[in-house]
Length: 157
Image (cartoon, rainbow, N blue to C red; front, side, top):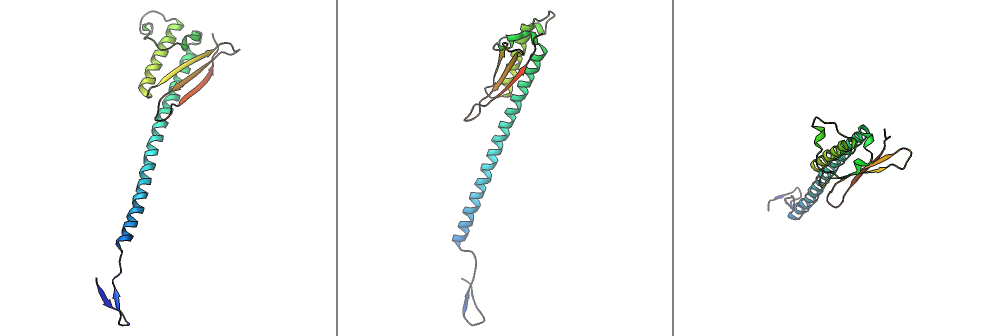
């Protein structure tokens, strides 16, 4: 220990940090760093959720536009996705139901590519004065299964 004499002739001991003070400062710094790491993980999860929600809104808007472009298909859009209808790429004309089946096929492929365990459904309510479709897009995230739903009115031509 370094010591020196002060003005009054007494011995003055060296001052500095003790080991306890250093350990307490280290603990406080560690807790702060853990808090920053937790915020970073939460922001990454929120960004991922935001991306999936954007994809769901885009998918719902896409099929809504396809339904509006083919309004005479009616309940054909409520079918589950089947095989691709080759009439779209062929030289023959597609019937409205065939075009709807093709649209649903493409829509399901897009949902599989852009959402984890993507689920897409369309229900048709033709009993109203203005028939409407309910479009629902769902996916899986850790701890929840969020969905996005829109309802669009479509006049049957």
